[in-house]
Length: 313
Image 1 (tube, rainbow, N blue to C red):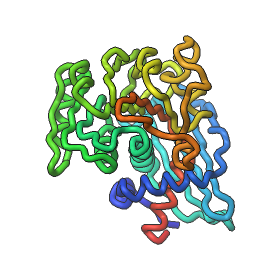
Image 2: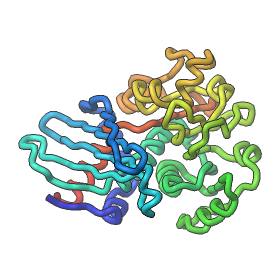
Image 3: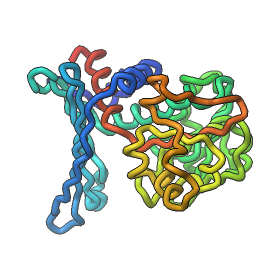
């Protein structure tokens, strides 16, 4: 069995190839059971959670992401969230590869947003605003730059020093990078707004959006989290990565559904629909589009399969 490090994952999964792998998997489909949650008692520390996320294509691919969340690890100077992806032979069940789960998740999450942008943002989108400065943000920037002719990237974060540090580390030849001091004007100036934060109250307001905007919401992975307000949802053509996941877990979808700002029937489509061509993407240059992702084990499987193929595992 091949053990694949985080560095190998980042080196192997270039975004152009990964985006195509995701598109192919969404088009073909695969089996994705509900995510398993198990509470684990930890003596002398807060309870932990074990997450199991399997997916398979009969005879073609089989794998499971295993994630542990141990809040007490902070006292040990260890990450609270640790993950690995176990890729198995789909015909025998024999282990093929153990892949760093954190790196795999970062790459596939960013690639999913870029895949959606390929359908939903304007083809001439040249200015990307990155809202958030966490570990995912640089990958989102790189992925979006893969699918659109981005010439300018602006970074905004609630901590200005973190924003400056991230901007300085971005390696984007031929692309100007700057830091925004104020979010409203940064939103107005951008073509694509990508958000990856832990916000529990909206950061991007609907009244700031203008014709042609594409809003990519990646944070907000629980029902209580929110990155955009109801007005943004009302004004936009709304798409999601998967209907089942977004309508159950994503605060940016669940809360507008509850308030009446969004009807379930008004969600235009998901990545299955877009990749299969059963629903249209952007209707015209003046439309405002919104994409909300919460992630799916399908994406992990597609990324792990590509890693194994490229490494000969």
